[in-house]
Length: 152
Image (cartoon, rainbow, N blue to C red; front, top):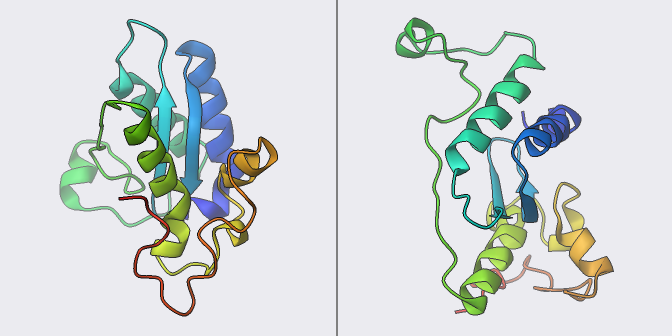
């Protein structure tokens, strides 16, 4: 669903970043969820408002045709997003690299492609242009795929 509406999602991110700036260090958009690494401005740790705005802006851009539970309907919620998000404060450069790698390998990990470069909705391609990754990073996982290119 997210990948079917990636332009609506991009606009939701743009609108949110105008009101509450942040840098997207890494992102991958999968059909039913996304992963991202952000840098927020110094002294600002409000991930929650940003996710709230992204989710609401995106949801307003879609027709109301998804199935929702009674509890969601009672709260006026849509059925597009999970209610929570996972947040982690990066500890050091190694932790940052591990999380960016995790984001970029996710389409492979979920069996959507065999090579990271084959998933279009990913900041991996920007990182290749910047010289942060070789285009064949993590190789072809069709044979093995056990470590998914993650650094341990």
